[in-house]
Image (cartoon, rainbow, N blue to C red; front, top):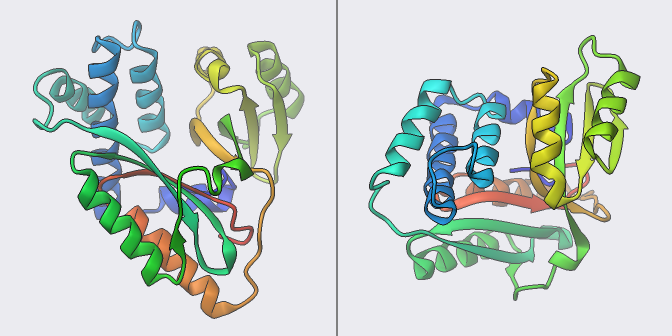
Length: 243
Protein backbone atom coordinates (compact mmCIF):
# COMPACT_ATOMS: atom_id res chain seq x y z
CA UNK A 1 0.00 0.00 0.00
CA UNK A 2 2.90 2.28 -0.66
CA UNK A 3 3.51 5.24 -2.89
CA UNK A 4 6.27 3.31 -4.58
CA UNK A 5 8.02 0.01 -4.00
CA UNK A 6 10.98 1.40 -2.08
CA UNK A 7 12.60 -1.39 -0.07
CA UNK A 8 12.15 0.37 3.28
CA UNK A 9 8.40 0.50 2.71
CA UNK A 10 8.23 -3.12 1.59
CA UNK A 11 10.24 -4.19 4.61
CA UNK A 12 7.85 -2.32 6.87
CA UNK A 13 4.97 -4.19 5.27
CA UNK A 14 6.67 -7.53 5.90
CA UNK A 15 7.06 -6.64 9.59
CA UNK A 16 3.36 -5.99 10.18
CA UNK A 17 1.65 -7.11 13.36
CA UNK A 18 -0.56 -10.18 13.29
CA UNK A 19 -3.69 -8.01 13.16
CA UNK A 20 -2.33 -6.09 10.18
CA UNK A 21 -1.45 -9.35 8.42
CA UNK A 22 -5.02 -10.53 8.98
CA UNK A 23 -6.24 -7.35 7.27
CA UNK A 24 -3.98 -8.14 4.29
CA UNK A 25 -5.47 -11.64 4.09
CA UNK A 26 -8.98 -10.15 4.16
CA UNK A 27 -8.20 -7.70 1.34
CA UNK A 28 -6.65 -10.34 -0.88
CA UNK A 29 -9.55 -12.71 -0.21
CA UNK A 30 -11.99 -10.00 -1.26
CA UNK A 31 -9.98 -9.34 -4.41
CA UNK A 32 -9.97 -13.05 -5.22
CA UNK A 33 -13.76 -13.12 -4.88
CA UNK A 34 -14.08 -10.33 -7.45
CA UNK A 35 -11.48 -11.93 -9.72
CA UNK A 36 -13.35 -15.23 -9.77
CA UNK A 37 -16.73 -13.55 -10.30
CA UNK A 38 -15.45 -11.41 -13.19
CA UNK A 39 -13.09 -14.01 -14.64
CA UNK A 40 -15.65 -16.78 -14.49
CA UNK A 41 -13.19 -19.36 -13.19
CA UNK A 42 -11.48 -20.43 -9.96
CA UNK A 43 -8.63 -21.91 -12.00
CA UNK A 44 -5.65 -19.50 -12.04
CA UNK A 45 -4.43 -21.13 -15.25
CA UNK A 46 -7.39 -19.64 -17.10
CA UNK A 47 -8.02 -16.58 -14.93
CA UNK A 48 -5.15 -14.10 -15.18
CA UNK A 49 -6.63 -11.73 -12.59
CA UNK A 50 -6.86 -14.55 -10.06
CA UNK A 51 -3.29 -15.50 -10.94
CA UNK A 52 -2.25 -11.91 -10.18
CA UNK A 53 -4.03 -12.10 -6.81
CA UNK A 54 -2.20 -15.30 -5.93
CA UNK A 55 1.16 -13.75 -6.84
CA UNK A 56 0.35 -10.71 -4.70
CA UNK A 57 -0.63 -12.97 -1.81
CA UNK A 58 2.60 -14.93 -2.02
CA UNK A 59 4.66 -11.73 -2.12
CA UNK A 60 2.80 -10.62 1.03
CA UNK A 61 3.83 -13.88 2.75
CA UNK A 62 0.31 -15.31 2.82
CA UNK A 63 0.68 -19.07 3.56
CA UNK A 64 -0.31 -21.42 0.73
CA UNK A 65 -3.05 -23.01 2.82
CA UNK A 66 -4.59 -19.58 3.39
CA UNK A 67 -4.50 -18.89 -0.34
CA UNK A 68 -6.15 -22.21 -1.16
CA UNK A 69 -8.81 -21.65 1.51
CA UNK A 70 -9.51 -18.15 0.18
CA UNK A 71 -9.92 -19.46 -3.38
CA UNK A 72 -12.34 -22.16 -2.25
CA UNK A 73 -14.36 -19.65 -0.25
CA UNK A 74 -14.40 -17.16 -3.12
CA UNK A 75 -15.42 -19.87 -5.59
CA UNK A 76 -18.41 -20.68 -3.40
CA UNK A 77 -20.63 -17.98 -2.00
CA UNK A 78 -17.67 -15.86 -0.91
CA UNK A 79 -18.77 -13.78 2.06
CA UNK A 80 -22.17 -13.15 0.51
CA UNK A 81 -21.42 -9.54 -0.39
CA UNK A 82 -21.30 -7.91 -3.81
CA UNK A 83 -18.24 -5.69 -4.12
CA UNK A 84 -17.58 -2.88 -6.57
CA UNK A 85 -14.26 -1.21 -7.29
CA UNK A 86 -14.15 2.53 -6.52
CA UNK A 87 -11.14 4.85 -6.68
CA UNK A 88 -10.79 8.04 -4.62
CA UNK A 89 -8.30 10.85 -5.21
CA UNK A 90 -7.24 13.76 -3.09
CA UNK A 91 -4.48 15.75 -1.43
CA UNK A 92 -2.91 15.01 1.91
CA UNK A 93 -0.96 17.46 4.09
CA UNK A 94 1.56 19.63 2.20
CA UNK A 95 -0.17 18.86 -1.08
CA UNK A 96 0.81 15.19 -1.24
CA UNK A 97 -1.14 13.49 -4.04
CA UNK A 98 -3.03 10.37 -2.92
CA UNK A 99 -4.95 7.70 -4.84
CA UNK A 100 -7.01 5.17 -2.88
CA UNK A 101 -8.30 2.00 -4.54
CA UNK A 102 -11.19 0.26 -2.77
CA UNK A 103 -13.51 -2.72 -3.04
CA UNK A 104 -16.72 -1.97 -1.19
CA UNK A 105 -20.24 -3.31 -0.71
CA UNK A 106 -21.46 0.10 0.50
CA UNK A 107 -20.25 3.09 -1.50
CA UNK A 108 -21.91 5.64 0.83
CA UNK A 109 -20.10 4.25 3.86
CA UNK A 110 -16.74 4.11 2.09
CA UNK A 111 -17.06 7.61 0.60
CA UNK A 112 -17.89 9.03 4.03
CA UNK A 113 -14.92 7.28 5.62
CA UNK A 114 -12.53 8.49 2.92
CA UNK A 115 -13.72 12.07 3.34
CA UNK A 116 -13.36 11.81 7.12
CA UNK A 117 -9.78 10.50 6.90
CA UNK A 118 -8.62 13.24 4.55
CA UNK A 119 -10.33 15.97 6.61
CA UNK A 120 -8.90 14.65 9.88
CA UNK A 121 -5.37 14.70 8.44
CA UNK A 122 -5.72 18.25 7.13
CA UNK A 123 -6.06 17.20 3.51
CA UNK A 124 -9.03 17.14 1.20
CA UNK A 125 -10.77 14.55 -0.93
CA UNK A 126 -11.06 15.68 -4.55
CA UNK A 127 -12.85 14.72 -7.72
CA UNK A 128 -11.90 11.86 -10.01
CA UNK A 129 -8.82 12.82 -12.02
CA UNK A 130 -7.61 15.55 -9.68
CA UNK A 131 -4.27 13.78 -8.99
CA UNK A 132 -4.18 10.68 -11.21
CA UNK A 133 -2.55 12.69 -14.02
CA UNK A 134 0.57 12.81 -11.82
CA UNK A 135 0.90 9.01 -11.83
CA UNK A 136 1.64 6.37 -14.45
CA UNK A 137 0.23 2.86 -14.13
CA UNK A 138 3.01 0.27 -14.35
CA UNK A 139 3.62 -3.32 -13.46
CA UNK A 140 6.26 -3.36 -10.72
CA UNK A 141 8.15 -6.50 -9.69
CA UNK A 142 10.63 -6.29 -6.84
CA UNK A 143 13.26 -8.97 -6.20
CA UNK A 144 15.66 -8.92 -3.27
CA UNK A 145 19.25 -8.65 -4.47
CA UNK A 146 20.80 -11.20 -2.09
CA UNK A 147 23.45 -13.01 -4.16
CA UNK A 148 21.68 -12.62 -7.50
CA UNK A 149 23.82 -11.33 -10.38
CA UNK A 150 22.53 -8.00 -11.66
CA UNK A 151 23.29 -8.65 -15.34
CA UNK A 152 21.56 -12.03 -15.23
CA UNK A 153 18.41 -10.69 -13.57
CA UNK A 154 18.28 -7.76 -16.00
CA UNK A 155 18.71 -10.08 -19.01
CA UNK A 156 15.94 -12.37 -17.79
CA UNK A 157 13.64 -9.41 -17.12
CA UNK A 158 14.16 -7.74 -20.47
CA UNK A 159 13.89 -11.05 -22.34
CA UNK A 160 10.57 -11.61 -20.57
CA UNK A 161 9.27 -8.29 -21.91
CA UNK A 162 10.04 -5.82 -19.13
CA UNK A 163 10.15 -2.15 -20.15
CA UNK A 164 12.70 -0.99 -17.57
CA UNK A 165 15.07 -2.32 -14.92
CA UNK A 166 16.61 -0.56 -11.91
CA UNK A 167 19.13 -1.83 -9.37
CA UNK A 168 18.66 -0.35 -5.90
CA UNK A 169 20.78 -0.93 -2.80
CA UNK A 170 18.87 -4.03 -1.63
CA UNK A 171 16.53 -4.90 -4.48
CA UNK A 172 16.05 -5.07 -8.22
CA UNK A 173 13.00 -3.23 -9.54
CA UNK A 174 11.49 -4.45 -12.79
CA UNK A 175 8.89 -2.35 -14.60
CA UNK A 176 6.40 -3.47 -17.24
CA UNK A 177 3.50 -2.11 -19.21
CA UNK A 178 0.28 -3.01 -17.33
CA UNK A 179 -0.84 -5.44 -20.07
CA UNK A 180 2.54 -7.21 -19.99
CA UNK A 181 2.76 -7.56 -16.21
CA UNK A 182 1.32 -11.07 -15.85
CA UNK A 183 3.43 -12.52 -18.66
CA UNK A 184 6.66 -10.98 -17.31
CA UNK A 185 5.92 -12.08 -13.76
CA UNK A 186 5.07 -15.62 -14.88
CA UNK A 187 8.27 -15.84 -16.94
CA UNK A 188 10.40 -14.74 -13.98
CA UNK A 189 8.51 -17.08 -11.66
CA UNK A 190 9.33 -19.93 -14.05
CA UNK A 191 13.00 -18.94 -13.71
CA UNK A 192 12.70 -19.54 -9.97
CA UNK A 193 12.69 -15.95 -8.75
CA UNK A 194 10.95 -15.04 -5.49
CA UNK A 195 9.23 -11.66 -5.38
CA UNK A 196 9.30 -9.18 -2.51
CA UNK A 197 6.42 -7.43 -4.28
CA UNK A 198 4.59 -7.99 -7.56
CA UNK A 199 1.62 -5.90 -8.62
CA UNK A 200 0.38 -3.21 -10.97
CA UNK A 201 1.00 0.14 -9.28
CA UNK A 202 0.29 3.82 -9.74
CA UNK A 203 3.87 5.15 -9.88
CA UNK A 204 4.32 8.90 -9.26
CA UNK A 205 5.93 10.90 -12.06
CA UNK A 206 7.46 13.22 -9.43
CA UNK A 207 7.76 13.14 -5.64
CA UNK A 208 7.04 15.80 -3.00
CA UNK A 209 8.96 16.09 0.26
CA UNK A 210 7.47 17.18 3.59
CA UNK A 211 9.91 19.21 5.68
CA UNK A 212 7.54 20.09 8.53
CA UNK A 213 7.45 17.36 11.21
CA UNK A 214 3.83 18.08 12.16
CA UNK A 215 2.73 17.80 8.54
CA UNK A 216 4.73 14.58 8.14
CA UNK A 217 3.03 13.12 11.22
CA UNK A 218 -0.39 14.04 9.82
CA UNK A 219 0.45 12.46 6.47
CA UNK A 220 1.58 9.28 8.17
CA UNK A 221 -1.64 9.26 10.20
CA UNK A 222 -3.65 9.54 6.97
CA UNK A 223 -1.81 6.54 5.50
CA UNK A 224 -2.33 4.57 8.72
CA UNK A 225 -6.07 5.27 8.78
CA UNK A 226 -6.42 4.25 5.14
CA UNK A 227 -4.39 1.09 5.66
CA UNK A 228 -6.57 0.05 8.61
CA UNK A 229 -9.77 0.29 6.54
CA UNK A 230 -10.96 -3.09 5.24
CA UNK A 231 -12.43 -1.55 2.09
CA UNK A 232 -9.07 -0.13 1.01
CA UNK A 233 -7.12 -2.35 -1.37
CA UNK A 234 -4.19 -0.05 -2.20
CA UNK A 235 -2.93 3.47 -1.52
CA UNK A 236 -0.60 5.28 -3.91
CA UNK A 237 1.04 8.61 -3.09
CA UNK A 238 3.98 10.79 -4.07
CA UNK A 239 5.43 11.46 -0.61
CA UNK A 240 9.19 11.40 -1.16
CA UNK A 241 10.29 10.69 2.38
CA UNK A 242 7.54 8.22 3.31
CA UNK A 243 10.00 5.87 4.98
